[in-house]
Amino acid sequence: MIVLLNDLSNLKKNIEREIANHKDNQPINISLEFNENKSTKKDNFNLINLKKVIAKIQKDYPNNEFKFEITYVKHNDFSIDSDKCKRLEEINNFLIDNYKSELLIRRDKELDRSFPFQSVINANRQIEKIINKVNKAKNDNPDISTFEQFMIIYEEVTDFIYKEEERYDQLNASHWISVVNSDKIVCTGYASLMQELTKRVFKENELLVLENDVDVFDKSRDELVSAHSNNIIFIKDKKYNINGLFYLDPCWDSIENKDEVKSYSYCCIPLGDIPHHKFFYFHFRNVYQYNLEESYDKFFDINKSKRIAKKIPLIKEFIREDYLEDKNSLHYYINNYESLDNKSIVPINAYINAFKIIGKQKGLKDEELSKFVKERIEKSIAKTSYYFYTDKCNASLVNQSNSSKQSKTMKR
Image 1 (spheres, helix red, strand yellow):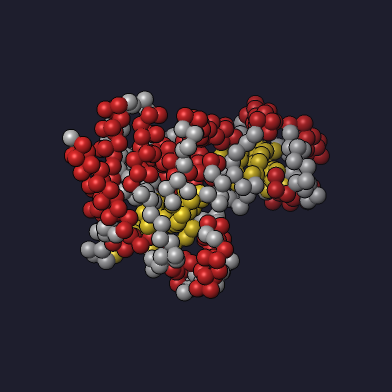
Image 2 (cartoon, rainbow, N blue to C red; image 1 turned 90 degrees about the vertical axis):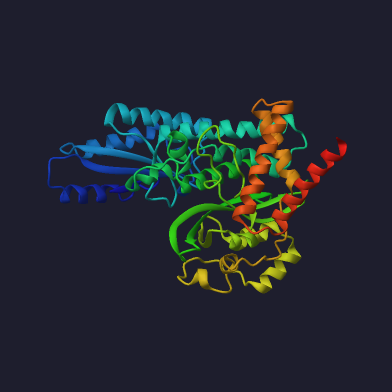
């Protein structure tokens, strides 16, 4: 039985129905929820008011034993400010001491997944540590660009080593709260963590990461290998003239051990490159939380958006079963790898400069820093050229790398 603490009008009716249907000697379970999105009084969820509700239930039904489960429902994220945190901590301690229960936190509309209060707090602290690295880089590098800041986050996320739970318990490895609280992570965990971090650092009209599902097909056998989670990224960066929509896969770019030279072969790949992967092809099945068309509209100028709108009438609903195959859908165009006027690439100097910033944050200097950058660039180019067709993006990587080598030779 779930009762909203925001609306107790049906509390008596619900409890009496539970009592009437209760047949054993076990306590009657009562789930009380406070939904911050359904209350005009944001501050009325506190220990004093909760105690009053529980005391009234126990007074009105003295012959019954109750077990209380309390859930705080967040509107759109899991961040908790310090004042609210203090109030929720009091409730959590009260439940632990009196009912052998913990305060649960979940997001609105995520009915199947709640997290203990303490795990949410711990996860937020870990997230803040990563965000602090971005803030430190901004202080140390006043001209740091959007892409360079993003790469610091990508570095942190891809530092997690893939380690999954048993199939029946993969929820513990698929949400960013569970991921940063444990040593378990699967593809959905990488995508979830990537989205959460970028959402907290960037404005939506400069960088937006979307969690995405794809079906991965083996080209040699022409059959489905597995479902897979990754990201789509919209990014604007004036410093490097980046303004586009890219494919992003932090899971496939993650390291397998701490001593590995990291490759960025799935970082900001143009959609036009995806069909040319040597071993696999991908079908985009879903993009969570945001409407793709609305996201696309945020990133490109009005005239371009009007041209896109003429080409793709904007569809706002995802409920139609044939949406992915609808030729009026942006999903359809992405799955068919249409460019959508998205000609932007990430130039090699953007990666080089980002690696320099990351290396300096790791305390590297001079020759050690140069080696760090060189090894990453060479491995990324080698793997990207091996996995993907050498189009404009990858050709620019190779050509600029060769130019850099030639200029060094000429200097010597």
